[in-house]
Image (cartoon, rainbow over all chains, first blue to last red; front, side, top):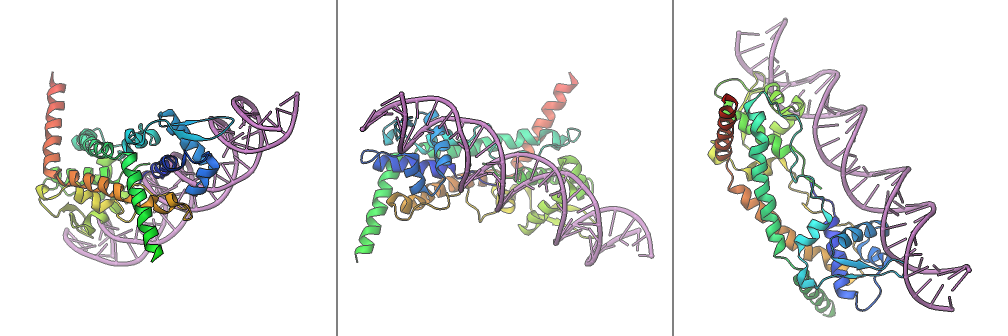
Length: 150
Length: 150
DNA sequence: TTAGTTGTAGTCACATCAACTACAACGTAT
DNA sequence: ATACGTTGTAGTTGATGTGACTACAACTAA
C-alpha cells in the first residue's frame, strides 16, 4: 500500500547534515534526536546512503557528512539509495491462470503501464535537489520565526 | 515499500469483463479461476469497484458487468477505487523533534514534493484507458497465437 | 423450496516494519 | 596501553497489513 518511511527519514538526515555538519559533529545519536527515530535505524539508513555515495561516516571517531554538494543530490538519488529496486511498485497477483488468454497476458499489459508510471515519478524526482529543499526549509523556518515574534 | 496487488487484480477483472461479459455469466468463481485469487477476495475487490461505479453486480442471480464503456474507464479510476486514499504514498517518520528547526519543518518540505509526485503519477494514469489496455491485450494474444502456430 | 450466488464477518499464516538489546570493530585521547 | 564514544550489524519483539480460507445470512430465479 505504501513505501517505508525511509525516503522521508533519509531526506531529513541529509537536510540536517546540509544545515549543521559544519557547526557540530553529527552522530547517529544527534540524528536520532532530530528525527525521533531509533539510532540503530538511523545507522541502517546511513549505511544505505553511504553505499550510494551520498554521505561519509567516520568509524571510531564518529560523525557523518555529505559526500556531495547539495545541488548535486536529487530526491531520485535518495530514493534509489533507500528503496529496494528489486520489488515492484505494484505487485502482480501471484497465480493468474495460464489457460486463460487474459490470465496469460495480464502481466505484460500491466507491466508496460506501471513502468511508465515509475519512470515518470523518477523523472520528477530527478528535478528536486537537496539544495532546493534546503532553501525551502530555511524559508519555512524564517516564516515560523517571524510569526512567533508578533 | 509497495502497494497491494489490488490494482493489478482489479485491472485483470475489468479486462476479463470487457472481453467476456457478453459471452458468459461472469461470477466471482469465474474471476477467481482466471486471476488465481480466492473468490472471497475477488468479491471484496468487486465491492470496491462497484462503490466506485465501475461495475454492476446482480445479487442472487449472480454475475458482474462493466457499468461504463471501456473507453470511459482509466487506470486512475481503478487506482482511486481500490487504493486507500487516506494513506500517504511515502509516510513520514512519526516523531520528528519539534525543538529542532529541521524536525519542525521537514514534513512541510517533503509533503510539497510528494504531492507533486502523486499528482504526476495520477495524471499519467488518467491517460491510460481500459479500451487501450484491451487492445494491447488482444494484440498480445494474437502474437502468442501466431508464435505457437509456427 | 431449492440451488447458486453475493456480501460480509472473522480466523489464520505469513511478511514487513520499526523499536530495541546486544556486542564486536574501530579510532582517538589520555 | 587502555578507556571511551562511536559505527556496523545480528537478532528479538510487537504492530500492522495482506491474502487464503471458513462460515453464513441475504438474495433471486427456476
